[in-house]
Amino acid sequence: MPGTIGWTGIDVYSKSSFMGKVIVIIGIIIIAIGLGIHYGVRIPWIGRLPGDILIQRENFTFYFPLTTGILLSLLIMGIIYIVRKISGG
Image (tube, rainbow, N blue to C red; front, side, top):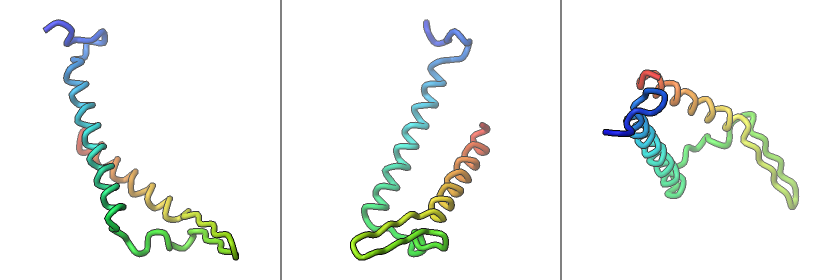
């Protein structure tokens, strides 16, 4: 089939097929997270960890979830690490 081998010598169709699967999986994950947020799946301690900054004044509230952000970042990095190890990347 003409055009299956790109200028690098890599099969272009198998590489694009892999990227298509990755995009679909990422989309499914984003939809699952969105549905979870929309329908109220809550973890009670998320947003109330020590280190989360909350400043309340009479007409002003400032909230910065520092510790929660760090924890979620570590969790996401761990998931990405496991997926890459499983997929051989």
